[in-house]
Image 1 (cartoon, rainbow, N blue to C red):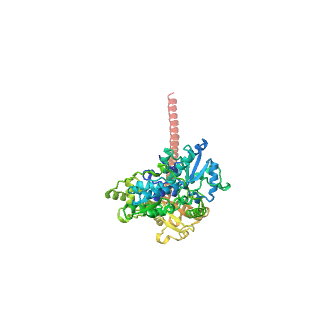
Image 2: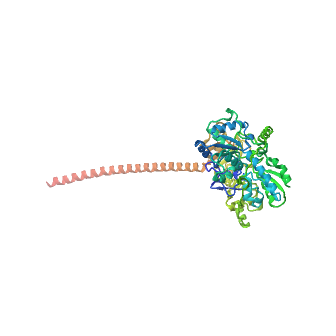
Image 3: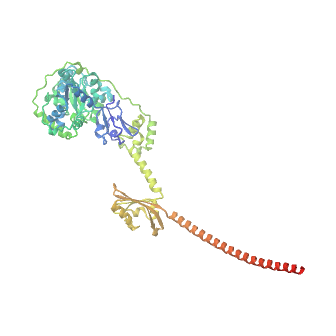
Length: 572
C-alpha cells in the first residue's frame, strides 16, 4: 500500500524535493514528482521543503472518526515530543477528550520498556561489534535498503510506539482502539504491518490533528488544562531529544564495553553507516535518528510550534519538573523483543562509461569543463546525474544550467536576428539594451548607447506616458522623419522589472510600396480619363461627319427627284 506520494494537482515540477532527497528516491514522471517506495526511507524531508504543499500521505483519520462513532474505547499514545511542540500541553489533552478519546497516555511509558529491553540485550550480547537503536523507522529503512551489511547490528526490539500499544491493548483490552499521536510521518510506514495484525490501530500526526481541530472549531487557547492519564518518568520522556536514549542507559552501555554515540540527521547517519561498513571503528552503541535534533525536529509538527531550539528548551524545562519515578511496567510479549529486519537492498544497474558520456553530451556537457557539478538538479555531480538519467530517475532537461543556457541561446538568437526593432528602457527611460535592428534603424552603437536617455535619439513622449500610466500602447503608426523610418509601434510596461520594452515593426518599405501603388492607380485613372475624352471627341467628329454626308445625300436625292419628275413632264 502506498503510504506517501505527491499530489499531481499541486506539484509544479520545481525539483526542490529531488534536491532535498538524500537517498534520491524521487523521480520526475511527466513533469510530476513521484516517490519510489522501494527506495524511500520515509523521512518526510521532501514534504517539508515542498513549496506547493503537494503532499499526499495516507491518513487514518477517517478510521479514527468511524471508531469514535461506533463507540469503541479510544486510547491515545502520545509521543513525548508534545511537551516541546505545544506550549500548553494540558490544553491539548482537553482537546483530545473533546474529539472523543477516552484516555491519553504517554508513549514514553513504552520508551521505558524499550530501554529495559536494550539493557537486557546488551547484557546477553556484549560480544557484538556494534549496536544500533531501532526506535527510528527511517533509520531502520535506511539500513535495510542502503546498508544491509549493518542489519546484524540493528537491535531486534520493538519501538516505543509498538511497546506502548502492547501495554495499552493489555490494559484496556484488545477491542480498544489505540492511536499513536506524534510528529513522525515514517511511523505510518512502521505501523502498517502492526495494523494488519491488530497490534495497533492508527497513526495520527500533530499536523493532522491541527486540521481536525480546525474542522471541529476547537481552539486550544479557549480550553482548560487537563492532566495526561498516565505520565512517564524522565527516563522515557528524554527520548525525543538527541542523546535521550543513551542518557538513560549510559551505565549499561559502558559496562558492556561499548562506546556511546548519538547521531541525528540523514547526512550524519549516512556518514556513520558508511564508516561502519568500512570497518573503520568497532564497539559502538549508536543512537540514530533521521530527524535533525531528534524526534522533536519531526516533519509533521503543529503549524503553531516554535523553532526546534525553543522546543528543546521547553522539553528541558518540563523534564526539570517531572517527579514520576520510573514505571514498573514490564512486558514479556514476544512482539517486543523478537523483532526482525529484512534485507531490502536497492540494487542499481550501473551505466557504462560510454553511456555516461552519451548522456552528458545530451545535456550539453561535451568537455570536462562543462561539468559544473552545481547540484541544482539534486545530484552532487554531473556524473551522478547522468547515472540517474540512465536509471530513469531523472531527465536531461533537469539540468538547470543546460536549460538556462539553451533558453538564453534561443532568446539571444531571436533578439539578434529578428527584423523587428527591439529595445529596453529603465524607469528613467535610459537605454538598457537594443538589438541590431534597432542599432541599424536609429544609427546607434551598443557600446555607446547603453545608459543614454532615449530622448537623445528620438522623441520619448509616448514612452513616458506608458511609464507613468503603466498602460501598454499597441500598434501605433509613428513616422521618424530624421531616420526616414515609418513604424508600427508597441510599447509595453514590464511591472516585475519596472522597465519598458518597445517593439517597432519597420513599415518603411511597405509604406513606399503603398505610395507607389497609389501613384500607379492615379496615373492609370488619368490615362483612362484621357482615353475616354479622346474617344468622345472622335465620336463627336464622326457624328459631325455623318450629319454632313446625310445632308448632302438628301440634297442629291431631291435634285434627282426633280430631274425625274421633269423628264416625265416632257414625255407627257
